[in-house]
Image (cartoon, rainbow, N blue to C red; front, side, top):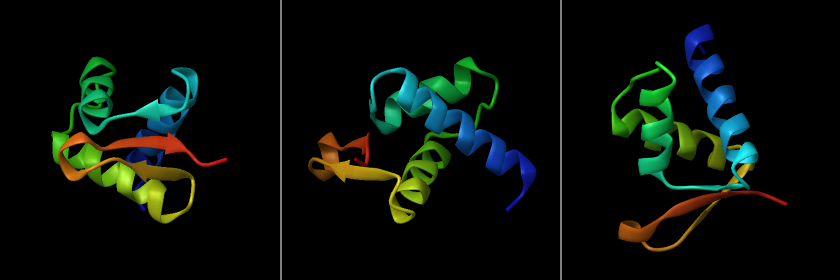
Length: 72
């Protein structure tokens, strides 16, 4: 994994925890844009899925109303 990918994903996880443990891909994309990471929405979605595959986040909701929460 590239250092930039690692740093971006860690920043996202810190933001999720800061805002209460729940985020949508749209919120993740807005966070990336606001903090200068600036990747496209698909990058935000892939990063959320990356954390989900590792058991850190849990995916909730239907395809068109999906959110991610911190695993307990």
